[in-house]
Image (cartoon, rainbow, N blue to C red; front, side, top):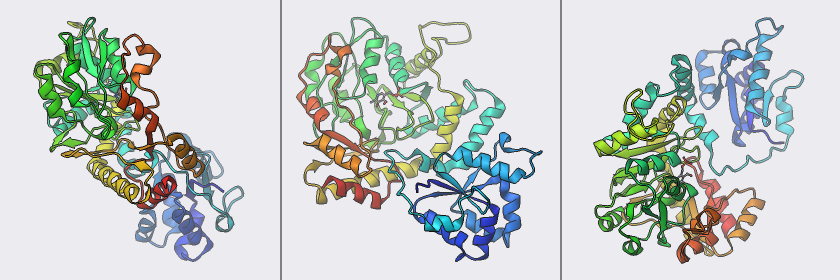
Amino acid sequence: MLITDLLISPSCLAEALRDPRSAAGQAVERARAAGVRVWLATGALGAYRSAAPSAAVLAAFAAPCQWLSALSGDADPAADDPLAVLLSRGLARLGAGARLLGRREGDLAPEALLAATLDPQPVAFVDLAAQQDRIRPELERRLDAVLRHGHYIMGPEIAELEARLAAYVGVRHAISCASGTDSLEIAMRALGIGPGDEVITVPFTWISTAETIAQVGATPVFVDIEPATFNLDPARLAAAITPRTRAIMPVSLFGQMPDMAAISAIAGKIPVIEDGAQSFGATRHGRRSCGVSAIGSTSFFPAKPLGCYGDGGCLFSDDEALAARMRAIRTHGGEKRHHHPYIGMNGRLDTLQAAVLLAKLALWDDEVAARGRIGAHYTQLISQRASAVTPPALLAGNTHVYAQYTIRAADRDGLAARLKAQGIPTAVYYPKCLHQQPCFAHVGHGPFPESERASREVLSLPMHPLLTPGLQERIVAGLA
Ligand SMILES: Cc1ncc(COP(=O)(O)O)c(C=O)c1O
């Protein structure tokens, strides 16, 4: 039986609190040990209090539980048993793997749970649900505040978020955007890049990096990567610069920055835009990603290290004039209401997404530290136990946020299939280089041997800040 979530009825709570060795007490313990998320319903608090010998005993039981909020639609004052209605409506929201531990018909009785064989919890590639468990009250408070003030576009959360992100990155200006893709496009528009211009980037990245260069009418010029870090190889950069080069856009792929100082030195006066979509929180010689070049750009796509619950992104700059242009372009090129000096776009971040990000910032420092620790632990385990695969290298002077923990393996597809058979999800970022994409056939050039080899060998493993050492051992055992 697969149980992902267990909602506790007041009757089972009473039983478990009266005697932890009772069937209900043992059932809760067993569910917890199996990784099931245990819930109490806020709407049943009165009933729980009546069922508990004291408030302190209830609070102790509740401490490791999640509180399931009651929504307006859960209330049915005319029902014969409003509490049963509230619990069943709440349960329905928890999804197909959720059961109500109770003693009424249709409930999961404690004895039945104790007798069942519980399936292991599915392994998540990125576990956003576990992250949500850590911030639920603040998240709900923030979202509810937006629903109440109603400023869905450019509400006060946007300015609050931008101020916090700018301070975090260490620059004067943060400009939130509707996506990481939009932010790259805005950056190039603000630099006046257009038809006839060239922008240098890598062919081993997500499509957005080069797509946005083409969107502004410029031509992407690809430079191969350094195999150890998957990032732009500074040694190949100078040869790609021409009189038409208007920007250099290195990508901080998988969560670590390239040698930005070397790139900037070669760039000279040509502006550098860091595509830090995957590296928010990473540092190079103590300076944060997105804060070391003319413009830094990141993405808040949900699976990114700092992700919202939809699309989102942000631009960073210390340059007052550039920041003002980017801010204007983000909002239809307008500098003030009904005055549009530039052609812009509707590229704003939603206030609701800013609220999500603000709630997540409470965890952020912890999560960045955990990502570094988990990545290092993977590397140590792989080096000791899985000789057929190569762990990712950490460039000296860098911290890594491991947006992806990406290994190389000669038999990548065979390995992915073996892990899948063991219930371990993996992903290939990226199976095809951008110069091999049909949309870039006209600018393709190549070959780019290191990018092409990477696209044949890479495999990304489950990675998120709540990945346990035990699960990492299981994953690495699957690689051996
Ligand atoms: C390297 C890189 N650049 C740009 C983007 C675009 O970000 P978004 O999905 O927020 O548009 C992504 C997102 O996946 C990315 O990984």
